[in-house]
Image 1: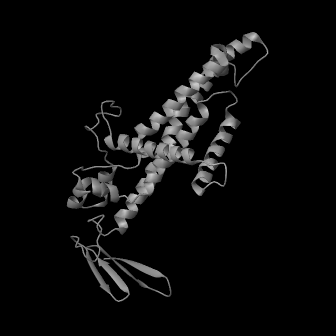
Image 2: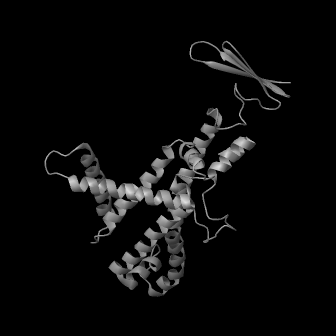
Image 3: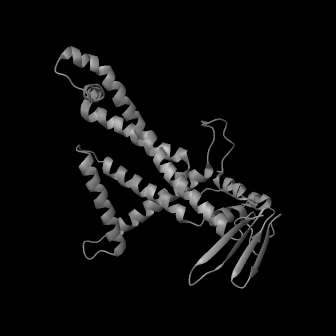
Amino acid sequence: MAAAESSGGATEYILHHQAFLSNKAPHGIIDFSVINYDTVFFSVLLALVFFGLFWSVARKATTGVPGKLQNLIEIIVGWVDGQVRDTFHGSSRLIAPLALTIFCWVFLFNFMDLVPVDLLPAAARGAGLEHLKVVPSTDINATFGLSLTVFILIIFYSLKMKGVVGFISELTLQPFRARNVLVQGLLVPVNFVLESVTFLARPISLSLRLYGNLYAGEMIFLLLAALTLSHGLDGVPHPHHHHPGLHLHGADDRLSIDGPRASLTGGACGKGSLVFVFEES
């Protein structure tokens, strides 16, 4: 945030918080040589938090009266197990633990968005790090990594359980069917195109939905910080800051901001209400 504070302005403040701590600047849309250290660090840290919490609860689990934390973990495990049983009808010792891991890991990713936006970046700046993003799911590389991993596992288990013929049949024999073999043969390319688009769109849609939701949430918090925190943004005038061309006056229950082309006057009007009047010069 040091660069943003020196230049001032909402744009500089937000762009500064949107920058990753990486080994180098990316060139083009796709650059696999770039490593975002903050994404890797917080992803591993949150994975260790998840593992340590569940391992501790499992080690101390009792068949008697469970504690609150054990109750919470049992509810999460039971809910995820029910979701897996409803959607996956095969037998695998990997799917349920994988679903539980992804659910808790992504939840911890998103939970980091509740940490005050300037808290950890300020600590990192004190340690000599200019940039730090603490929400891994605001990095599209992390969301794509999760979705592609699940996508590969879907293909693997589909081939394992249904075989190559069954897997190809799902892509070519639906949604359009015909009793006539010749007509069905003509529908195979159409079915393949339609099913392939849907199939390939899954990892893209999942990753972009998660990334978009958390990116929008982070932007809201940054805007709130920029507009409300007195030290979060130098470009927003407040009683202890002077902004060129703007003059702020406060007296009793009234507040006035005078600019070169307009003025904004606000004051209390009744219990619990505030009214602002905009006048153009």
